[in-house]
Amino acid sequence: MELKGKLAEAFNDQVTLELQASLVYRQLGVDMALLDLPGISGWFRAQAEEEVVHAHKFMDHMTDRDAHPAIGAMQAPGAAVDSVLAAFEAALVHERKVSESIRDLYRLAQAEGDIDSIPLLNWFITEQLEEEATVSEIIGRVRLIDDDGPGLLRLDSELGARKPAAE
Image 1 (cartoon, one colour):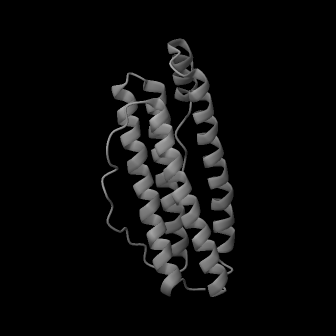
Image 2 (image 1 turned 90 degrees about the vertical axis):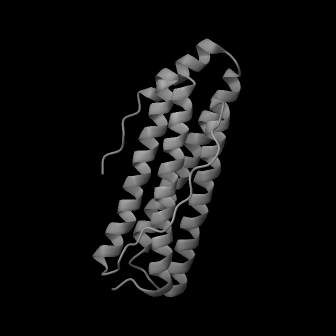
């Protein structure tokens, strides 16, 4: 079934949002590198790569259905953050935005009777639940650590063990 009309436009918007998320995470990675936290910086860089993989999943779905993926305009990520807590709070805000966008896509696919999109969107709904839970857990741990230097360095080391996602 060809993907067209409002749903194709919404998929293009999602592609752009996923790539925008990658830029947000790249900026947060830079901000953490400037705080001398290479592990947390690496975690954000890996997250940025994962968002690109997500954009490709949407683009592949579109091309498989004879739709034309088109990347829309993106904004610069915005002001730099100056703390680990602020970085992960910014990440959570963005993840929630992406989650709601995917839910909107799901609702639109249902309204349009596009059952071919549902498996992909189900995968993303599960993925977004995991993303939000992971970032929320990290925020909780950062709050527990507070200003404890050794605790922050331990978290930096732990998050730095994350490997980039494979496409």
